Image (cartoon, rainbow, N blue to C red):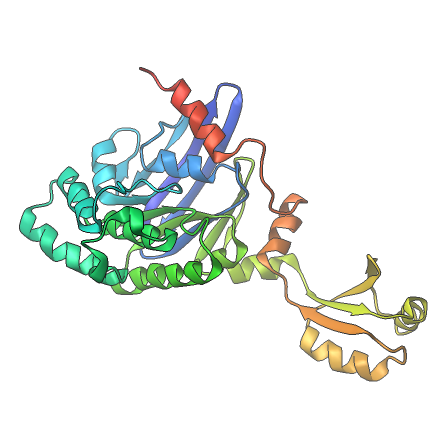
Length: 322
């Protein structure tokens, strides 16, 4: 069952189209990823779905509520963790949660129970009385997730949840996110430009320059790119190329290495190594990655766009009616 339905969503800032007529659905209880470079339209889409920005055209429903006509109902049903921290670092962790609960009209008794629950979920129950300015970046991000959960949302939006965090902290953060999915059966909609993070998603929409260019599971997307990649290096490049031609093995040269694309790299390599007489320096086998998927679909690697998220939102603030 779909909990998010997006139909022809468009966002324009003057002559610039940030999001171009995108349509997709998100199933209840799945981790859904928006993968793309900075400036691709990921954060703008989340801003529209969370009713921060009005769409220029199109519409969407979140848990049955339309973002264009039922903004208050949409906001009550979602949690949102921004890319940039929005905590009050002069308050304690508990005070940040309490303030958020009051905004949502959560009764005191309900808050006390939920506070313990969400702090325990992100391993911050022993830090609840500490001032947030003393927290590390990872602790702040975990507290923001706890704050986004205090009102029991049906959908949790995470905008680049691990940006700026070290690899170890990012890994721990994903433990908490996946725990949310399993223990709370929560729908999680996240944006990222980290390929390894996208692997955690049940499905991924790849977005580039405001348009969705593919949508499927990570495995299906990688399978659609093609074959396994075998790479060979040698000090006798000419002799190796001659051997491969003689064995009728297709290859291409890339910066002094030879690349061979095959259906089953594990089965191909042993037979190749038994056949070759030219001494090799290195042999590597690599499965297609989401980097390969993006390169295949767009002709480019993930890169920073001239129009960054901050540029777009800054422009959006200037365009807002006063």
